[in-house]
Image (cartoon, rainbow, N blue to C red; front, side, top):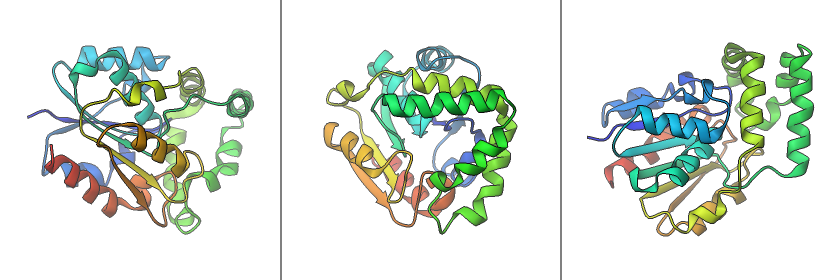
Length: 230
């Protein structure tokens, strides 16, 4: 059976999937990739994933992980059995977003990582979920450290527009987004789902960008249904 490969978001690790791993591993073999921590660009990350994991791939990526999944699709569409794209975007960064990331990178280089992360917590979570999840989120990002934050932001800034790929995707695709996601707003997920033939779209209420933590039960049910249909 083809394992599910879980792809974490920017500066995140396996803890991002803490509620999904026990639920999904009872249904399907899985693994959590770490290529985003070991290579400098999305194309390099995708090439490493393809080299390290031979055969068919079932990819489930959130945020930057979804962008990486689309890059794997770009490089080896014949190997993709199914895709789940969570809280992500197929668009390239706008000049304004590139400037924001560049400004943040300068602050990371000055040792002001915690300051930047604290200031951006409101963008990561629905307001109802921030207080209970912020501490664990900050700890996870701080484990990655400033060097990884800088490298992964640069990788995301350099990514191409993946929207031209979408109409050619022929595998089963699940697209999920939090209704109050401010970092990759629902319109980005609507755009992806509308462009991919047969894609299934789910918007989750009371949920921001960290949907695997904010609404784990709903995410688990959606992923279990998606897997059952493969």
